[in-house]
Image 1 (cartoon, rainbow, N blue to C red):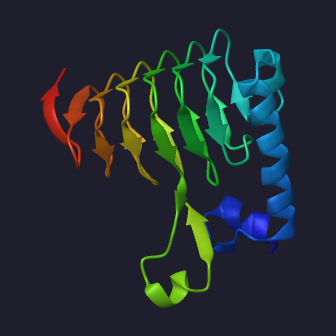
Image 2 (tube, rainbow, N blue to C red):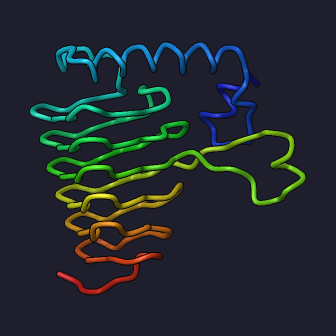
Length: 177
């Protein structure tokens, strides 16, 4: 199995693999051009999917691009970071504030394994009509249900039920719709 195949399967992989390094360099060039004012059409074919009327305000940052799937009418405000070593799905009508960070990238907890400079990824799924406040961080493996609200500056470490409002570090449920 190649390092890329391991990455896409969520297994430990070597991020220093030449194929992955070439892909990240290529992604950096596309993102840099977009952030410098290239039209949003530059992202079509780069992202895994970008739905109708979706907007990514520059600057925007990601690792690969092809693991990011945006539904229709998704809005990402300035400065968002999506570490997409694993799949990141964002549902229709979701609004994401400035400087939000969504991490599918993860690292081993075992220091011996971590010393081998291996990484892994876990998918992040954000439902439909979700509102994520500025500066929030969504950690690897998290699923956010439809119609949820994530408070500004929150660190989401676990799944968020549909219709829940969460806030804080770590994010806790403060209300339900």
